[in-house]
Length: 201
Image 1 (spheres, rainbow, N blue to C red):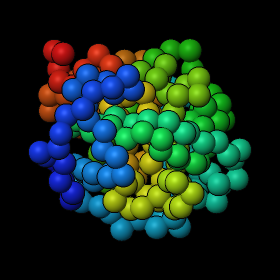
Image 2 (cartoon, rainbow, N blue to C red; image 1 turned 180 degrees about the horizontal axis):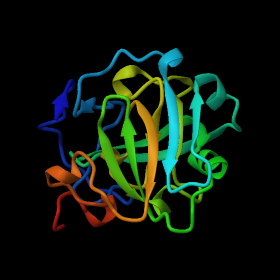
Image 3 (cartoon, one colour; image 1 turned 90 degrees about the horizontal axis):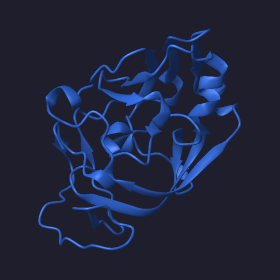
Image 4 (tube, one colour; image 1 turned 180 degrees about the vertical axis):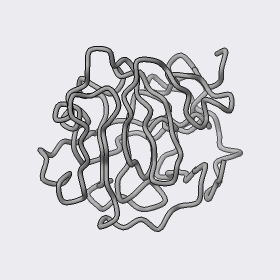
C-alpha cells in the first residue's frame, strides 16, 4: 500500500461512534493508495456501468454532472484503523446511475474499478438503496486527486478500501469476484462494525 501521509503511532480511542479497533483521525485525512495518483483530468474521466444490465451506459464528466445531485454527510472508516467523523461529499447517488443502466435480476454483485486498474468487489445490496455515491466534491471543494479526484466511489458503511478512487466503472455480476485487496488477503465485504478486515475475520 502506498502511503503519502503517516498514521502510525496514533492513540487508540473508543467511543459510541467508533467501530472496534478504530481511532478518531480528527482533522487529518490520511492518504493511502495501492497505486500512484494518476494525472486524470475531468475532461478525461468517464464512468461506465456494464455487465448484467439491460443497457450498458457510459457517462462523461458533463453527463454525470447533469444528473440529479446527491450528497453524503457522515462518517468514514479505514481498515488501517482511522475513522473520520462529519465528512461531507457531494456528487450523484449510485442508484441514479444504476437505474439508467437497469440491473438484471441475476445481478447480485459488482466489481468497481478505477482508471488506474485497481478494483474492489461489493455485493450489489451494498451499492443500492441510498448507500453509495459517485462524488467529486469534499467539504464544498473539488475532490483532491490524492483522495480520488476528479471522482471516486463512496460506500461509507464499509471500510474505505471499497470506496474506489478515480472510479471508472462498475461491472455487475451474478457472483462474487474478488478485487485487488480481496485477492491479497482482505475480507470480501469489509464491515467496520464487525471488524471484517482480513479473510477469515
